[in-house]
Image (cartoon, rainbow, N blue to C red; front, side, top):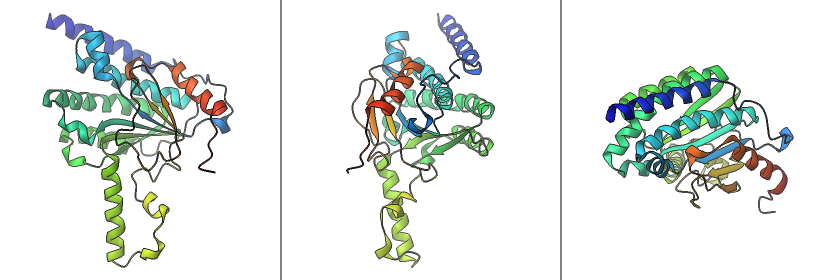
Length: 268
């Protein structure tokens, strides 16, 4: 029975891998003027566990499907001319989950680092890893992440930030400590501290702007310690589907709604 499950998983993975390497989903479908396409999309990829339990009776299988979906989603964003994609892969709070599930997730990250690296190089996607608690990440995962980041450093079609062992409060604490250190070392005049002082010390300082859109899947309506500073004026979209069930049409609908139906006033 276990052998049948393994064979089924391998067949499904092979099918997914074939699809990811195909040109499916690489045509631009939103037909939104490029000036109205969100330049930076952030995603909270929620619902993997529930999806896996409901479909396979296994939470870890849901995580496998969720990892595949990330590669696919990146391909869709590239097709729609999104410049930056930032995804919440694993939070600093997720370490408190069941150790078996965490170990399974780390195994998935380790394997998909390789898949993602190959696809990113093929499609000219630069990958950046954002972590506030990096020392907790197992060494074998860190090696895969480092290779993925280093080998895609010069890619330029799109930037994908993967938030791994990340928490926004921790990010802001680190930024604040950096400001304090610079003041104490006389590198920074306290009177000159402003929003930009903090912004430059956040992990997303390289993105060219905060997210225009946040998508959270699986029907949950909260931010969950993700990009708290950066989401100040972001348009929020909450999708009922769990992350592995997301289709390109869902992304296209968000882009169209953002372009036509949402007006960003920034408090004005």
